[in-house]
Amino acid sequence: MSEKVNIAVFVSGMGTNIGAIYNACKKKKYPAHIKLVISNKNCNAYQLSKRLMLNTKLIKNSNNNFEEIINKYLIDYEIELICLAGFMKILSPSFTKIWKNRILNIHPSLLPFFPGLNVFEKFSNSGMKIHGSTVHIVNEKIDSGKILSQLAIPVSENEKRNTILRKLKRLENDLYVETIKQYIYKKFYPNKKSPSNKKRNSYNEFIISM
Ligand code: GRF
Image (cartoon, rainbow, N blue to C red; front, top):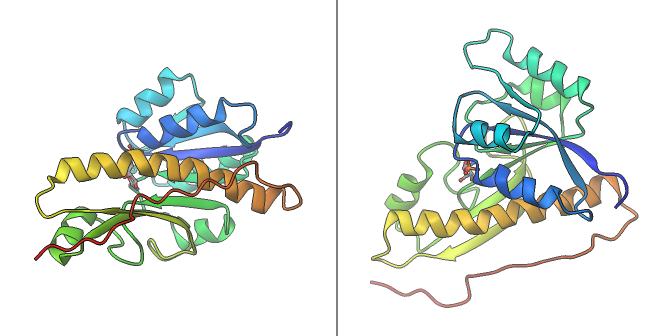
């Protein structure tokens, strides 16, 4: 892959996804290059991004013209695709309209189940035995854009919250990296074949618990 697509990663959290995306982007064949990182708080992801010497901007929510500032950076750095990775701020409909089909997000549930906040609590209360993660296109409604990929994990009765979340996190990092790659090929290089079409499914058994 000679030319890479310029991506911006928006973060507010732990930074596992940006870490995984960074590692992928280091590979010659991966079709993306992290040109910009936007964080709205001084979080782990922000610190990690700085340590990795990425072009990192801290723009706090208190900024009145938050989106204007971001937009300017996105244009200045010729960003072609935005990847939200745990970004805890809702983007306005006018912003998502400008960047239509150019913003991806990863959400830690099997959408359309459990959009929004407090996902794990919603999942626990639902009694569902399968949990998962979804990568989708961002539109003007929260966690409602076109679903691009999902992974599912079985959850047994006695499994602890942290164990489930850790399992999900590890898998969702891979899911995001792979989905970004596939999406870039589809959108920016429709005539080229994506090098791999890795499918991962860790849900392969009946789960019966009463
Ligand atoms: C992930 O669980 C993602 O699904 C959700 O926010 C979390 C971000 O994690 N949208 P990290 O900051 O990338 O570790």
